Amino acid sequence: MSSFLSFAQLCQRVEGVSGSLEKIELVASFLKDLDDDELEVASGFIMGEIFSPSLDLVMGVGPSILYEAMARACGCSTERIMEWLRSTGDPGLVASMAVENKKPIGFAAFIRHDPLSIKEVHQRLLTVARASGKGSQDTKVKNLQYLFSQATPLEGQYIARLAIEDMRIGVGEGGVRDAIARAFSRDPSEVERAYNLTNDIGLVAVNARRGTLADLSVQIGRPIKMMLAQVGEGISSSMQELGPAAIEWKYDGARVQIHKDKKRVRIFSRRLEDVTRSLPEIVRLAQGVRADEAILDGEVVAMGKDSRPLAFQEILKRFRRKYKVEKQAKETPLHLFLFDLIYLDGNSTLDLPLTQRRELLEGIADSSILADQVISNSIQRAEEIYRQALDKGHEGLILKNPLSSYTPGKRGKNWLKIKPVMETLDLAVIGARWGEGRRASFLGSYRLACLDEATNKLLDIGWVATGLTDGALAELTDLFQDLILMQKGMEVELKPAVIFEVAYEEIQKSQSYSSGYALRFPRLVRVRDDKSLEEADSLERVASLYQGQRGRNNYI
Ligand code: AMP
Image (cartoon, rainbow, N blue to C red; front, side, top):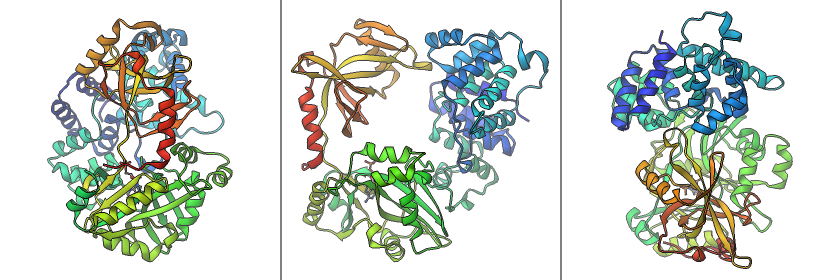
């Protein structure tokens, strides 16, 4: 049986090396020596996935539970913990400091305990996640408290990170997949395929060891990674690339994968979270599909009275709603547009060409819940459909290769998305937030503002996280060092002097920011060191871009 300490030591070593190959090598040699149960758990732990997705559990541990548990286990005050947090910015390091300074009280004083094992930590975290309803806060705190009371400082560090499902050791999904392939001498593409089909890294690891990866397949009730679209180089070159294409609107909504097993329906979001309870009208529509078993892929759209899609936030509200769901469903009804079929009555349809999948889909679903599709090789026809989509307030087109199979988790040339080019905004940087963990000495995200020309005031419009390399982040941090006006916890107020050019998916109305707007998916294009503060984009321009989104009409 492997100790949790050996896992924590692995994490420490992995965190300490920068090369991804080195990281993968370390993880692979660790996984190789575990028994099946440990392998299943540890493969998920490494990427911050604590439970098999089939358990459909969420940890439900926020800062207050975590720090309360540390404080109780280690006999220190939450104020002390908050001080450590301010100085390190890293809950993991805070846990290791708390354990280091532990006064032997409570569990630790009375019980001599064998070293924690990987399985025991997993079991405790399961208990934490399963606690619900009255008294659940207390159950969560007590179980975490128990773990911290038994932990060494290094173990404490990674228990805290597991509890918040954020390992920060620089190994993501791809890294763990490669480590599994390496540990058990399997082809990485075989591991990737199995993972995309099952979305369950523990299951994949165990099957990789046994040599049974090929046996893993689509299964009703287990979400599979969605096929994704690549950006097309404009309509004409995309049409030329595809030859005849299946032309579909790119509906302005949210992706859903629907699993129908007789009358039982489960709906998964793009991130493969179970959202069934929030979407009762979609459940009813799926129940009407004429198949015993099916996995359907499509988009749900919130439509206003004018039959135009509502802003994305409205859909988000629906997806997140847990109570009074039917009321919300009446206020913001969703429409369903199915465009693919993954499984039908006992058989995977993944490897059939799109045209056949579509034919089967048309056989089981009413046209009222199907995405429109035209197969054509005419550029002119594609342009017409594109204009219709934009006129109706949708995003553009998805052009699909009619002969292509369904490739889960892949962003490939078989689906090309065509959208209008979004304008960028030049915004003043008025604040920033220190990074966490390894990036604690860098400013990682930046608060942006536009200029209200009427009052000459800068009004905030949200944050952009840069997604930059450490080197570039250090440079940016340097740039802002002399502009720091005030430190407020993890945030700093900056003297406005620097302009960022920022791209985004959409402008939304928002009460969170003084401009009254927020950017969806902002990303830093470049630092406009050629521009002065007065040249920041105005509130008026933001407002007019917001209006213009409703009638997008230029395309790549
Ligand atoms: P993007 O999110 O920009 O990468 O675009 C891909 C997304 O477009 C998919 O994940 C779907 O949510 C959405 N979408 C809308 N209409 C379609 C369609 N007809 N076929 C495929 N995806 C669509």
